[in-house]
Image (cartoon, rainbow, N blue to C red; front, side, top):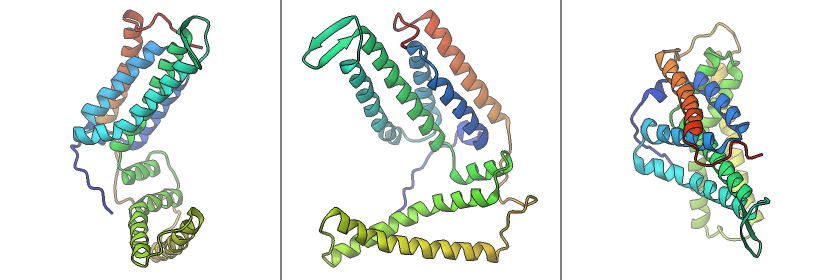
Length: 260
């Protein structure tokens, strides 16, 4: 089963994957310790602009990717708003208790979840796994035996999906696709596990035949350089964070700066 989606390459795709990973992890930690909902909303809107305008994918796929995370945003924010605690009551109806504090905390929690999702989507949609692992070996000095192991695992996911469909079709033809969950798991797990072990053994033999080793002075098929796009990405993220703080101070959405 192959999912082939055409996309336009943007400057986000040309950014060094390791550098992009480190910057996004830093933004992730910043959001984790950010308690001002106004800043968080501005940051989420900025990430949303990056997601829709600079990932290079058709809008219908972007909406499809974004939809599950939007549902998570709505459910997270509404749960905290409807059932949270607080002293300034706005609405009380049965178990529903909406307070001023629960509303602000709900918005904060929802936009925090949305920001995490957008960071992950932007990174995954603009980073090829092959380039990421080659960059980790070249810039962050990750040992090749770990990088190639993860790389082989990622490349085998589509193959395993194809095998799952093959096993599923074979069981349907034989009329053996019914039964309980445990019985179904046994029917699927045994052939898939045996095929995976055989494939892993073949890959290991092929790599040893090509003299794969953990030597430090090795050559790489792909060279992932540090370029001007890394500076553009860094300045963009710093500008986005600075603009979020500035707009939150000048044009706040809510009259609160800390929801703790």
